[in-house]
Length: 269
Image 1 (cartoon, rainbow, N blue to C red):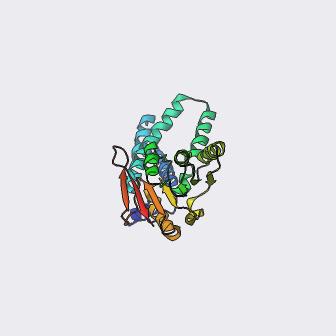
Image 2 (image 1 turned 90 degrees about the vertical axis):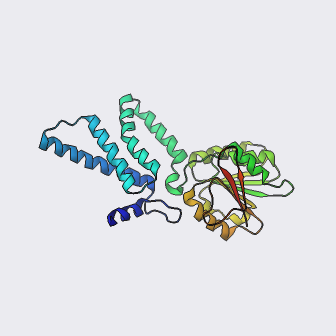
């Protein structure tokens, strides 16, 4: 039991503690280790009992073992699902007999969009249009504001706000390469020069330069982001988060977005 707890501490991702290795890499290790163990097991069964091992049995065993291992290591439930489905998806991809270059192109495209998740621990979460509308309602057009979008993605939030409030200054920071390139080009091509997109991690930007900081990231990084907000944002500024709250700190306002139980949370510094 102590061994399992040690391994789960090694892999488990929590809001307060960063894992020793990324969860995606841990999930890959689980799949590889289970593949080796299942391969050895079925080989021993075949040699000792002279029982034929069909590929279908191997895939079922590997899928079950990987999902069980992810559960024992207390990975999030979706990783258990991914571990269970991965062997079947590999078999499906093999049976389609597509051009290998297609897989390479798809991998590079997905990595350009989602590869930063390995470092930032934030999946690609695009802010919906309703979030932009609700966010715009919290901004005062009479003031000259500087707005930052942490994890700006393809720039939808900043460009949407720039259409409504062209007098404001906007900045975005994005770690994923492909969304950064797209949003940077969109900002350069639009009229005016009040939208600036920067490549990098939010930890490398000074929040003191902004009146409003908006984020739609992940529960995993909210505690770290909140510490940075408290340390750097000036009195009178506002930190706004779509969907995700700061644990232990009640928001100053919470606005429901649409008919779903999703809110726009705000904290006044």
